[in-house]
Every structure is written in structure tokens, then in C-alpha cells.
Length: 330
Image (cartoon, rainbow, N blue to C red; front, side, top):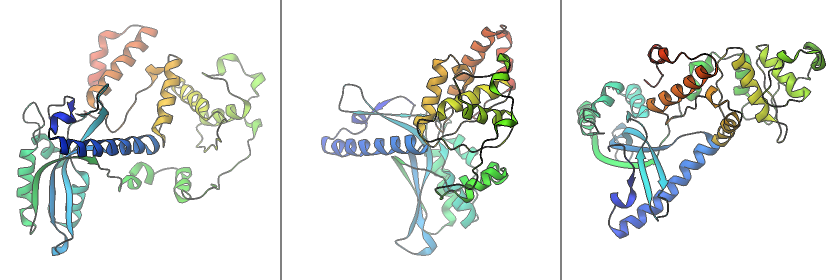
């Protein structure tokens, strides 16, 4: 609860219970890794407290939801037949619980205020939050809030497609949404190489490349630099990663910010590794659901320091820069 790595064998000491817990930990760790790597979804959480009440007044059909959720890392202890658990972020009120209560009852949970109650001391203490939620749910017949701790897989994805950034997106994103289940998307176009200056007629300073690019890849880069929205089909072996790297470098060179998302976490890790190999990792700010304020701060300081040294040292204003541009995570 203090945020330190803790052995599973320390939490569960009885041999028969530990054997079952170790088996569950192995299955959970595999599921967390699978969803993180293949889908880019972080699902490993410590749930503190469980709210439960009969749905529509019928017994046997309970609503059951965690109250507090905190991202947890579950790793194998090196050299030992054991696991380690560590909280990776401050706990937050379960957004699914907040939404369900708002839509189906007159109870509105102030999630930020309730979350702060769990940190009135130096360590995570869920009891004040659970007591408060218990009192707020008193108007629901049969409602209980159990003081339990559960490590499992949880994900709240229901509102993802209702994100304003998607609802207000350009026509290309709308087309992708409408045809998300199709094998072929109706956006195929033949390249028109005459639109841009021929490669052999360009000045060297106009070629902003980190990695080599063939004519088709350069055509994609030219469209991106021209500000067009494009969808590029990249069968295996056609250089999708190197084209993405070149596009990032080109846009950053033009003073723009770039958001890179991927279905597979491994793809993003590969991209980050290539940038690091070319000494361009200071351009990168790696974010995930488990990236906390301190990790963001460390990355920003490292990037700013390296970039300032490469141009003109202005480290004296580093503190003011960080204060004027706080991270989204606070």
C-alpha cells in the first residue's frame, strides 16, 4: 500500500493458499501481457473495495463494481519461484461505477474529491473512501460496500468511441469507423508522382530523411508534409516502420507535434528503439495509462536537457519551462 514492491509469498503465507495464488498470478500476468502487447490495453489493477446491490430489486442479479482502481505491475521475482506486485499510480474512483450511478440513480460521485481521501496519509488508505461511498449508497436498497482487495483485469472502454476527438474527426477517420469490419477500405488511390518535385531535382536540404525511402515511401511523406490525411496500406516487408520514423522526423523538423498510436505495444516499442538507435529519443515522450507524473517529468527534463545542450544551453529557465507547461497528469 506504500507503493513498494511486495512479494506474493509475503502477502499469502499459507502453503495451500499460496499455491493457488501463484497459479492465479501466472494466468493474470499472461492476460495482462497479452492485452497490453496485442491490443495496447492496460488492464492490471488493484481494486480496493467492492460495491454491490440487487439490480432492479431482484435477488441473484447483483450489480457488482470495484470502488477504487490503481494500476499494478505483476512481475516474476528473478531467480525465485515467486511474484512481485507494485502499485504504479495513485488510485482513482472506478469510472464505470461513477457512470452507472449517474445514469441509473440520483447519486453523483465526485471522483477527484473521493480519490484524494485515500491519500490523507503518506500511503494508500482506501477506508475513508469506502466509508464515504457506503454512506452515499445508503439510499439504494440492499447496497453494501465490502472492504476487500482484489488484483485482477479491469478495463473501461465503453466511452472510447464517444471521444470528442473522434466525433469531430475528418472524413478519413469517419470512413475508417464505418468500415472497421471490412477487409478492404474504399479509399484506394493511385499515386500521382507528378504532384511533387522529382527526387533527382530536389536540393539536399529539402530531403528530411532519417532512414532511406523509396519513391513510393517518399510520395507518402510528401503527402503528409503537405498536410493531407492519408491511409497507407503496408503489407509486411514494405517499410511501414521506417516510413513512420521518417514522417515523425519530418513533422518535428517542421515544428509540429506528432501523436503515435498503435494496436500492438510491441510496434510502439520497436519505433522507440529505432529512434533511440539514431540518437533521436529526446524527441519522444512515451505515454501509457500507467505513466505517472514523475515519469513524465523525468522524460521532459531529459529531453529538454539534451536538446538545449545540442543547440544553446538555456538550462537556467528549465524550472520556469516545466511550471509554465505542466503535464496533463498533474
